[in-house]
Image 1 (tube, rainbow, N blue to C red):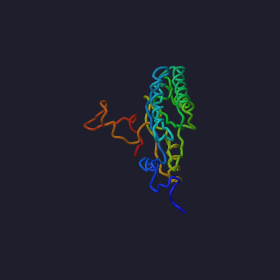
Image 2: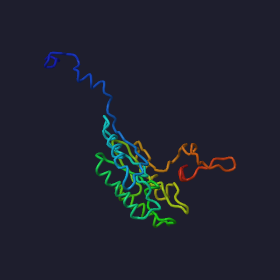
Image 3: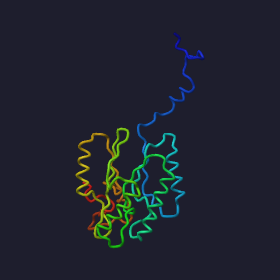
Image 4: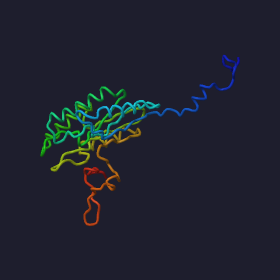
Length: 222
């Protein structure tokens, strides 16, 4: 039989040429969006416009990862003010997002009163977990052969907070890496390791050496 199409033309069609010119769709396309700092009332339209733009790309994103500090400043606020910020975040996500999304917790997402101790800090962290619809404070996500380990890197200390991976979480992280050989990405609000603090105008120095705060890099980064 003839290999020609119904038109009798044996060459590639215009549609085939377009398909060949178009780059192949990636197996997984992820948008990483961090430090939005959404307040309880203003600037929602700006955030909605950005997220709609992210989701309207030619190669549609399969998932959005939020890197924390989703709300403006839940810490050191009246609890009702913090709840209002978190509620506004939920409303914005419900009205705007059409693809799966996952978040980690940032230091500004955690309510606690001035001078709070660990129990109050944990209450504030649980409020963020519920608002961001996280299964727990750290967890894993698998999509299209890739694995994302969503870390809880913000922890209280005597003055404010510090970045670290606590003992229980470190044991979980080790198990996850040992039993899953998929390509893996770690998502952490406070960087595990970064050169960015070297550009900070507030970088501390001591006896001729740079001193980088554990609010800028994980205390147990190594």
